Length: 113
Length: 111
Picture (cartoon, each protein chain N blue to C red):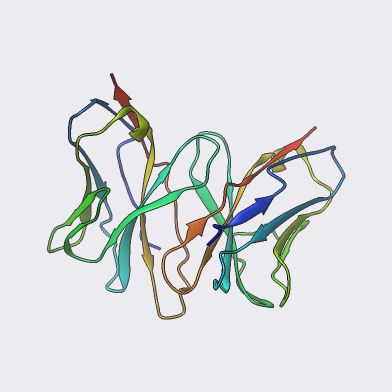
């Protein structure tokens, strides 16, 4: 399993764009990059997933450089409700969905009024 | 479409008792995963099951822990003779072959 490294914590003011970068130097050819958000006492919630270049949905954008050794989750105009722990995961996702996800310690984002 | 359901949400057991945690996957999902999370830590993979089969149990302790996903009914994570170190949040996730969707978790407290 490819291991990931991300900052332990980040602070941001409301309305700002937040970029959280994750390193995954040993990412394999078959690996996808997935980001989850977790609020206290809740299960992780899927945010976005990508393989290369850029992926955007209604919640966030994911930027992946050509070498795929890192990725950046971008949250536009954060609000107080975005305060949570964000996990970057790298895992194989084959046709049977046998993806064994490795959660690191995540990045604790605190949004300040 | 209801999400992944777990019950109970909170479970208190005394040392030596058994704990049974239940997980009902999302409709149409045939893959179930169990994770454990200690305070201030990330989730740790325990076991991955498909209907009636254990596919990967590499993260599950060899003793006292077992998991099943019968043809009918929810997946069960069973912990026998619980110890204080088993106190944690246990999350279940399900998938149909794509991304995993997580339940709200069961918080186990061992007194």
